[in-house]
Length: 179
Image 1 (tube, rainbow, N blue to C red):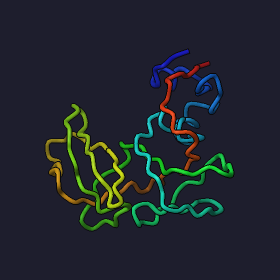
Image 2: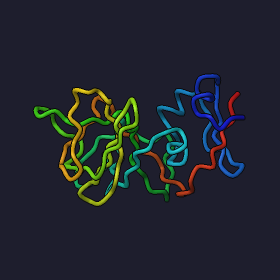
Image 3: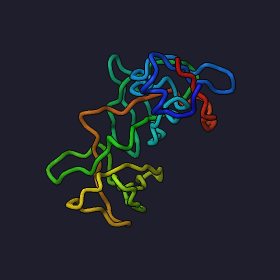
Image 4: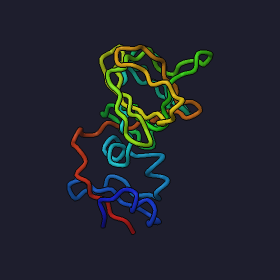
């Protein structure tokens, strides 16, 4: 048993994520990392960007979610349970600022703060609907870091965000079991 995500991912063939004695998901490290079963597992495994869509439209291979007035093509949830809402989840390291000639996946967003973290610069931003997100930029000296108050467009293509059942909004209790 470990609380260390990196250790569990690197040493395990299969991992069980538990919450209050209940198994939330069992899978290979890659399955958990790439396809969490719900918002609890997503938070626990490092999907720090969790957005509430205004609307979700199921599809066959991909689903659509509307976030801050923008249509997003999303990976379909691996668990489709009735009566639950869905959230859109993204990894902060997969988000970047759109280039001038590049179509935006989400924006405009307003930069609220930046923080130097050594290898990365964490950018906090607010969407037009008031939701917040944080993402990471490389701390490359040549990179121009956006100023707080500036408006930017962000992208994550070719990756698609994931839709997962929201489940309860309990904070992760940090229990994972590696086998």
